[in-house]
Image (cartoon, rainbow, N blue to C red; front, side, top):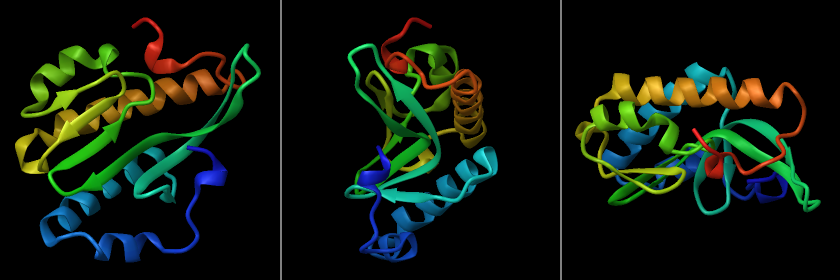
Length: 149
């Protein structure tokens, strides 16, 4: 997500209020976790992605921009947690997480009660630290989740 994708037509609190009660609770829990890890305030992107922290990327193709370091998209029936450096590097922790599914850089959770929150926090902490350490050297030059572990 880039700055141009940032929403200004609705606040994060208004967005959360539009969610059903259970999803509001799960959303607030994840928000607190991500804010604690990143020390950043949330940014609302697109349809409903909530992101924390920003890193810059610039690929050999010339494509460049910014993306959230931590982020998630709460929606009914499926909370998507984005691991911008990919799920493969966290396979051991994900095996202990609880009920979820994954793709290259997404962890899908139906309800937070289905997963072990301390494990989710470990994964998010490691992902944040990894991306932050890479971005301190300048813009990241490759798609992180497609890179090797």
